[in-house]
Structures are given as structure tokens and as C-alpha cells.
Length: 382
Image (cartoon, rainbow, N blue to C red; front, side):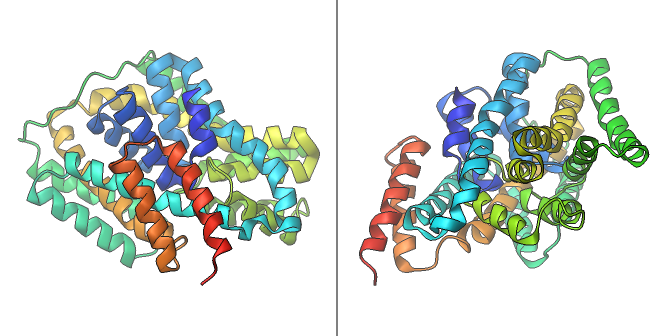
């Protein structure tokens, strides 16, 4: 139920999702501490796939094993999948993508990310050295536009931490409960690579459309670094030249994906629906998220031991600061630049931030208030 609530209310893209997750899982429920949460975020930043969905899968795995991981993924993803299938076909016809309440949802994401930056910065950058890492990472992220820059910055930060923080007595936080052993993790990782290799081979020897769809979406989900938006050109190359989807249909679905909550990867549900109806939507959604599931379940059994190594703790101390820097940069671009266009937008964002930080209201209420506020502002143009 918790992940389903997040799936219905988490607007604003993957960076905002991490803010929603932290508010729900760390602050409100205390299922893990800030440091463990940042460690998990750092791991998912290194892995290909949708980072926010992978964080949710990881938390579900810690709380309830494989059923918990599956439930966390379904809860967070299913609302968006259903909305993409329904909403994508109407957004162009009725112009809902330009309405004030949708813009209010985008403004709410600014407040959510700002709260996450503030909270994580206090706990993960407590000294001058790590504050410099935060600022340096944010500056470079804004100056260099590349899908790989985040991975490079995290590696550089880890090297700095390995050299300068390895002797620091960093608390690793409570032991994360993982019901999987390393042998099991190796099996999941093997399955990931086998599918990546075998699906294109099987596709080349058959003419089955469902196998071609499975291969295209699995491969797209396996090769994406840098967030959900990076998957769009990969998907376009798979579905438009093949004739499955027209360019106009592709762009219409992309517009709808910006207006619904949950992960951007659920754009695959829209494309699958266009290709082959409901069965296509289910197949495309499962295929594009399957790599993320296999990678998280496969790597977490090794991650818990690694993060308790003294030298690794030093590296993670710096990596966590870099994660805050990446979040700070994302607060400006794309969250701020896509949402704050006028002084009235900024006023609405400030109000949402105040309700979150000082009013202590749950994010879903703040999201609803911001949506109403965005609609009200359209009634008084100026």
C-alpha cells in the first residue's frame, strides 16, 4: 500500500521520486536510516536502468524478500502504467498537458526535491570536505551535459573518499536485512546477462513479433544510464523505424509521460498498447523493467558486505556527498527549469516547501494542494 500511494502521488521524474521515497521510508516510517538510503541510491546510480524504481525494489527486498521487491515495484509502477494507457490517448485531444493543475504538479516536484536536498545535505555532508564535494559535483553536473557524467563523478568521489575518509569512523548504519545469499545473487546476475545475449539471437532466427518486442524493450532497459529520459532515444530507434509506432504517436505518448506520476519507464506501456493492445502493454512494461529487477536483486547481497568494509565506508562517505550534489544540480535542471517560469510559480513552490518542511504535511497532500494552486492561478492571469 505504501508503494502504491507513492505510485499515485510521485510526480516530477526520478529525482523527485527519490525525495518522495526518502520522506516516506526514512523520515515517516524509519525503515532505514539516511546513510543506508544514500548507499542504496548510490548503488542504483551505478546500475543501468530507472534509479528510482530500483531504489524502491531494493527497499521492498529488504522489507519482504522477493515478494516484497515485486510488491514494491508493482505498487509504484502499476498506477502509472494504467494512467499512461488511458491518459496518453486523451492528453492531445483535450489539451490536458497545458492545464494549470498539471503545471501545479510540476511545481510540487520543486518543493519535494528541495526538501530532500536540505535533509540529505545536513546528514551526509556534515564537514567542509564533503560540502566541497557536494558543491563540486553540482557545478560539474550543470556544466557538463552527458549521460555518463554522474557515473564518472561518483567514481571520482569514491576515489577521494577512499584516500581521505578511509580512517574516519563512519557509521554504516543498521545491518540491512537481506533474505538472499551471494549464490542467489549470482544467479540473478547470470539471468540478466543471458537474456541480454540470447534474446537478440532468438529474435534473428524467428519472426515472432512478441519476441521482437521483448528483445527491444529488454535491451532498452538494460543499456540506459543517466535516468529515465535517456531511454527515449533508444526506444524511438526501436519502435519508429520498425513501423510499430509513428513519430506522432511516439511524441504524444512522451507528452503524456510528463504529466503522470511514477517512473518515466512506464512510457513503455503506452508504446506496447499502440503496438499490440493490452498484451503488448503488459509485455513491454515487464520487459523494460526486468533488467532493473534482476540487477538490484543480484547486486544487493554483495553490496551489504562491501559497504561495511572500512575503506569502502570512506569511499561511500564521499559518494553519498556526491549524490547530494547530483540531487542539487537536478533541483535546478530539469526540475526548476521545467517548472518555475514566473514569480507566481515560485510563490507556489515556496508555499509547497513550507507545507512540507514546516507544516510537516505528507507529500501527497502537498501535491494535491499544488495541483489546486496551479489551477487557481490560471483563473487570475497576469
